[in-house]
Length: 181
Image (tube, rainbow, N blue to C red):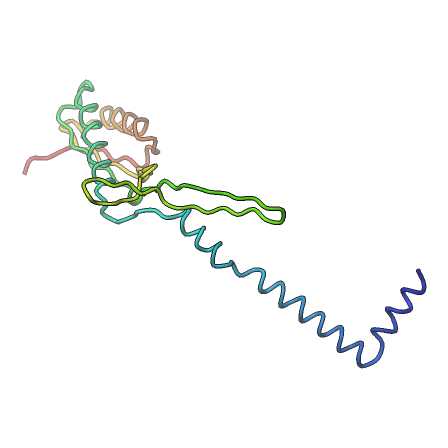
C-alpha cells in the first residue's frame, strides 16, 4: 500500500505534477459544465410533455366562465329574498389543452430509450392532435348584483353561497345592489 502512495506522490511532484493537477481539474469542471446542458432529445421531450394550447381569450375559457355564471345566476335566483341577480366571474387565465401522446420505449443492455409522438386524428380530410385533457383556469373572484343587495343579511347569504359554490374565499366575492339607470 505504501508503494502505491509513494508512486502517486512522485507523479504529482514538480512542475509536471502541477500541470497534471491543473489539467485534471479543468477537465473535471468542463465535464460538470457540459453535463448540465440538456441534450437535444431531452429538451424536445420536455417541450412535448408541456405542449399546451393557451390563449388569453380562449373559447374554452369563455364557455367555462359563461357556464359558471349561468349556473350561479340560476342558483341565486332560487334563493329566498334574492330577486333577480347578475353574476360576473373572473378567471385566473385561460384553458389549457393537453394533447394525447403515444410513448414507445425500447430497452437494451446499456440504455432505456423512450420516444413520444402526438396522437393524430383525421376528420373530414383535416388532421389534428387528439386532446386528452382540458384544464380550466381557477376562479379568482365574483361580483353579484341583486335587487336586495343593499341588505346585510342578503349580502352575507349570497357571499356564503357563492364562496361555497366556487371554492373561493368570501373576501373574493362582492355583493351589491343592482340599480336601474
